[in-house]
Image (cartoon, rainbow, N blue to C red; front, side):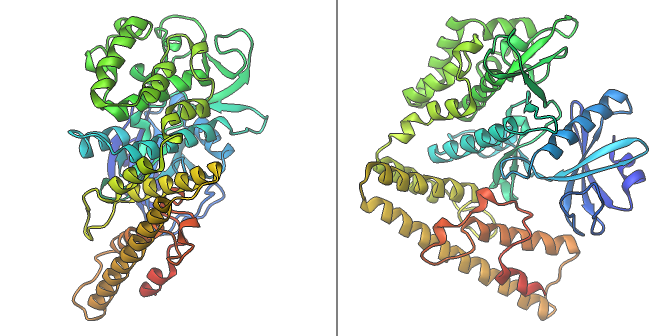
Length: 461
């Protein structure tokens, strides 16, 4: 429903500021007018919070059922740092709406805005894909009230969202509208895994596995399984490398029959993979992992998300510490952006992820290296340096407000400032001494986390 509907029915709760259309639902960006704490709200919404409200597209019962189905999935899943945060739901005039964390953009637009003419740094690609895999695995591990499992069925860059200001945030999986209950069955091509039988084809054509691509007018049951999800995951990995899939490169993404035929043609896939990836110096391990994931035969693909991630990162797992360190330095030396010219959140997240792998590498092989200590010292130095930048900027802001030279125009402006500073502080952890590296960092923390650094928040009391 459009923002007029949201305003008419939920105007006592929200001020609508922007409308975003979707295929099966509408998204309205809104600001909370007051603290909202009803029985259907599982996570408190405070005055000034920016929320994405997902509502039915039209008044049809199927649109409403789709929203209610998505609510069921969110309700069955505990809050997860790799999934868009779910606040709860509301319903008026028989129209249910979902209240979600508001993203800056999606992975598709992020890639083409920030890295359109250049490759994503290697360590950052690793971090992004690992987060996506952890989010998808979390969905597969949801246990419903009747012990049922779930499949997402619509994994694509447009359904992976980027959080954080100035396009420097963290990715999370969203849009669970196509998610469905999966049960074990024997009469399917994904034998041995949980599967979902449906009379309808779900997902975007380009990112869907060929075995589920049946025309809408064909009355056959479509069998979805984890290998079906792995197929989509493989194409997302290819998108991170190239910014597009082979099918988009050849302009057949909207030609259903040609698209399906191309997905089933192993010779075509081999040639396109060679053309698209070898020119970018992608490792042989990654080429093999992606090619296996998009195999036309679901039994030839990786049979779990973890198996795909292990294949994709095989070269990284065996990477010498020197290469790890080079990737870490590359991330931390990327151009500084934003008002304070600091290291971007996603690059910090990825760099700390690399450091943790260096530590694991040493522990597994019972060796020590000066490079791992050097990486730690560099991260620690930057953590303290950037914490001081944020603290000084906050002090300057507060002094200007106290002297009447500057003021926030609204509660939202104040909250935006707190979140921007506080989230960046969380990037580096809340402690900046010798043990800061062991703290949970921004990749595991929501930008709306209430436990922002007390030293920052105290300035606003």
